[in-house]
Image 1 (tube, rainbow, N blue to C red):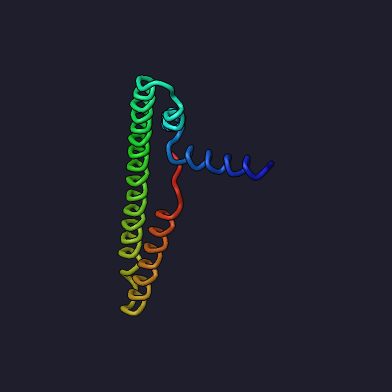
Image 2: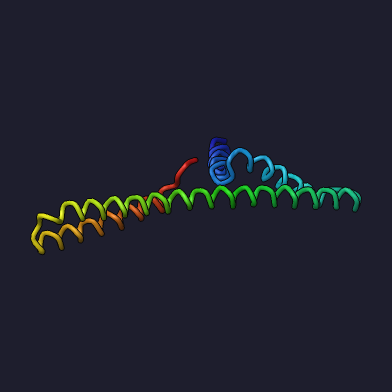
Length: 127
């Protein structure tokens, strides 16, 4: 009895994470309308269910697109900010170093930038 509930909770959390609260209601409403579409007895109600279901699903996809674009902009901003900060740090610290120390520092900074970019892109950012 616990397993279906657990599956439903996981699915609900994933949908909520992707669409957010404003996109959750149109998604569920559109899904319900499209699921019950074949069970309608007359053609007129089938048309209404189909059109409303598609409209609600389109609204939820639009909300998802807006949310994902915003998160992508935040991620790119964080990556650029980290890169610029590391470049400034390298410029300030490299003034008094030898060539070998500069190369080692530059290699470490590149590795930090790559690790930071990988961490930002793999971890989801909430609002």
